[in-house]
Image 1 (cartoon, helix red, strand yellow):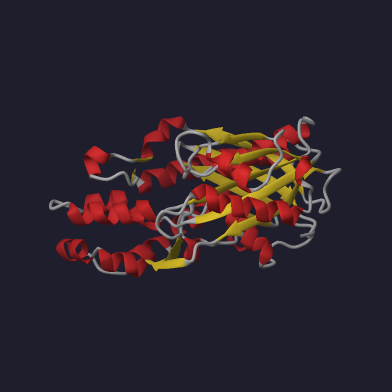
Image 2 (cartoon, rainbow, N blue to C red):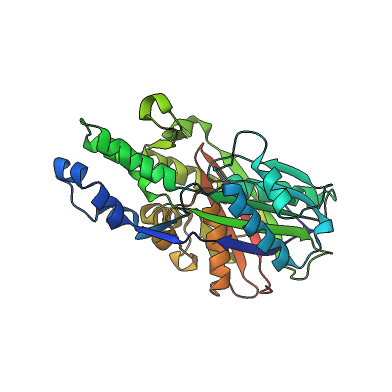
Length: 352
C-alpha cells in the first residue's frame, strides 16, 4: 500500500476513571495464590503492567466511542458534511445487531450519506478501519472519515478472577492460561483521516503492508460461555508463550514487506508505536526487527492491554507528550490474534 493523498488529521483518546493495580487483582486471587504457593507481585513482574483502568460497570462501548469520535472530529476542524465513513473497530460492541457504529453515528451527529459499519479483527480492528478509510480516500470515494473503538475489559478481568476462585481443582496451568486476561484494561481511541487537499496538518499516512498466519488462530481465543462459566461475561484462553513467538515471527516478515512498500530502511524510522501487550513482547519485538527500543513509546505500564484501542491510544498519548517531533517518520507496528499483522508508516509534520 502506498498512499499519495491521505492525511492523519486527528487522534484522540478517552481513559476510564477507575484505576485497578496488578496488586489489587492478585489480592483478590489470594486463595488461589496461597493454595498454589504463588507470590504476589508476579503479574507486574512478568508483564510490566502496574495498573489498568476500567469504565463503570455496564458502560456502553458505543456511548464512549461517540464521545471519542466527536472529540476527534472537532479536533480535525473538518465540517461533518465532508465525512463519508464511520467505522467502529473494537472487540467490544453494544450488541450483535445492529452495528455499534450506528449508535455512534447518531450520537456524533454524522451525515446520512456516510458509510457506517463495524470491523471486527481482535486487536487490529481500528488499524483495519484506518486501512479501509485510507483506501477510500485514495480512490476518491470519500474526503474524510473517522474510525473509533472502545474496549471495556472489566467483565473479562472480573470474570476470569471469579472463574479461578470458583475452580476447586485450579492448577498453575489454569492460572497460566488465564494470565493474559488479567493484563486487560479499558480505553477508547479515534483517528480522523482526510484527503490532503482538505488537510490543515499535512501529516501524511504513507502506506504499509499486512500479513496473516491463520495457522496460529487457536493460540488466543475469547468468547462468552454461559454453560461453562455460569454467566455471560467473556473469558479468554491464551497460550502466551506460543503466541509471543508466533507473533514476533509474523511481525518480522511484515516489517520487511512494509519497508519495501515504503522504500524505508530501519534508519528511516524515527519513532514507533506497537500493540501494548507486555514488556517481554516489546523487548523481543524490537530485538527481532533490529530497531532501537529508544524510538518506542509505551503505555502498557499504566493502561495495560486495551485491545484494538491500545496502539492508537499509545500513538495519541505519545504525540501529546512530544515523543513525536516535526519531520519524524513514524511506524505503527500492529499485531493481533488470529494471527494478523498490519504495519503502517506516517510522516508527521508536527501540526496538531
